[in-house]
Amino acid sequence: MKTSILAVTLFAAVAATASAQSAAQSSVSVYGLVDMALVRESGAAAGGATKLTGGVGSGSRLGFKGTEDLGGGLSALFVLESGFQPDTGASGQGGLLLGRQAFAGLQSAYGTVLLGRQYTPQYLTVVMADPFGFGHAGDSKNLMPGTGAGYTRMDNTMKYLSPVAGGVSGELAYAPGEVSGDSSAGRQIGAALAYAGGPLKLRLGYHNRNNDTAVVKNVSAARNLVLAAVYDLPLVKLHFAYGSNKGVNSSPLRNAANPFGYAVAPVASVDSRDLLAGITVPFGQHALMASYIRKDDKTSRRQDASQMAVGYKYWLSKRTDIYTAYARIDNKNGAGYTVGSAIESGTGDSAFNLGLRHAF
Image (tube, rainbow, N blue to C red):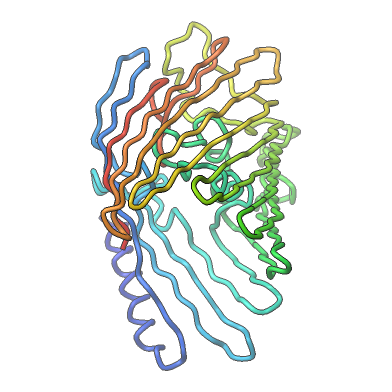
């Protein structure tokens, strides 16, 4: 209740500030997305599950964003974005008030500096290549690291976005671990280099997370490197990604509760390779999506996995679509990967979605 009151108060304050500053060439906009779907999950040791759940194709959200012209080519900007569950009304991201994004920054001809809770460059690289957009049953996060252990968002982050020159741009991010007496413990570093020219988009993303804490030391760092490419042909869009993951927490399991009931619980890989190949076929108000992902576990356990996924979207308008998707994972040697969605980890090795999504 206190969180809800605080949220309403904060959002009202932002709106009031926007109105008061309208004469100073500033702008504030309210936006959001509501996503609801019927989900059927199968393959878990406990049996199948049917759910009416939120955030399947995309995480539901309510956000405020704004800019102010400071003169001389300099602008201030901010984003405040809260995730929520429309099926229950609960807050997302573990109950955080502004769990999706919360940052402020300055933008000029020399680039943009942002401070606060933000997406990692590595996450933005993988999502660019995913034909399912990090959602639906075909979500690439089911096998490729992009969530958990800090690979979706970074707290306490300083990020620099370079200007675009000849289609090339760069991104740097740094987040201190804020551990007293140890400046390296818990810190995160991210970077990306991107190119966009004509039908081709390329992006190379990197993430490094120090796993030490105030009491646990000398844990191997998590290091992720991923190359993503999208080629937009007249009739189809081709998607590709290849990633390398090394170290503790470099490829965490989305569901670490041993959902298949193995005698020996699955272990998250500390040395793996990922391959994604996908396709999107848009035609009129329709779009077909398909992808294949392979997880190659380089450890002695060889807990490999592969995922096949297909999906369909129909746009009722520019802001509203209905969708359906199906994905299945083939786990090898006791691997424990599950089919989830945009915000859920999943409970089994296959899932079907039928949903409605509206943006405003």
